[in-house]
Image (cartoon, rainbow, N blue to C red; front, side, top):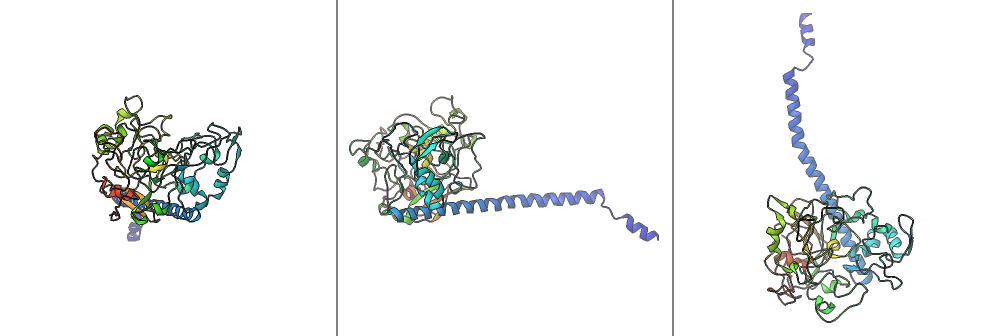
Length: 413
């Protein structure tokens, strides 16, 4: 009887045994959590790639229907009024035209037909194709299209905000900065064929698959569809001075500092103690150019307006390596917008043939001390440093962004 009694008395753990079990569980959790997080990111990255593939398929279906690609920025100009309610000033993004081809026919019907009232019920009489793409009471612009969002980007609109919905996929405008934000066509749709600002002159540095206020086609991609980037990822700016999301606004005119060699901005812009962020001095009030962090300027950066075709919101350039800084002359104006993502080590790009590939931050970017394409190497003004039809000075990365640089051997490692 005593032996049985003693055996039953040892049914509980000792304190040492309990601590050992807790320690083992802690180690297992520590080992498993990174694996779970990695698995989740792998799933998000796959979903992002699938989103891009759907956009690529939509792009090809659009081309099959019209024998052209949508304009980088386009739309309509209504002669019946000049306010932002009555016309969109030819600033609608290339993404708007793809809506019927990504199962967004309902949203397309809203945009392509007149709309009488805004989201608050005020009578506005919006014209077909809607108002300017930064309008904050036009319901379609506030509608989030899930196919335009990368699941690895956690940035969301501010609570209670009527800000335009976000996006993570921008069209490739090539490797040039000089005067390619309007394509030589003004807000009323009038083209000029002479002078520095003209459409004919601007074609020299509109070297990407997409061009502002012009409809390009696959026939224009002479380097080959499989050798040319059509679009790339960006993340939506969260107001945290991150290089990935924010765009440095340099100021000046089109012959100004945006035409400086891309690599020359490094010491000026990047925080040496936090190399993934802009320097704190660039916040508003710091003097010189700025990177927005307040409620008035946070919306003037990458990923913040899906229907907006201006450079900051609709384009990427193959100048700086992925996840590096971006520079613009003024909001949505001349400059170079660098692709970015929250995927480790690089970004997804959509090739013109519809393939989705991953480009690492270490891709060859050539001579980062080369002046902007089309600009004079001394004055920064109009010149012939590199014009359309010539090889990019920005290595394999720049070559992949041009449609007609005669760089058919450019590949993604």
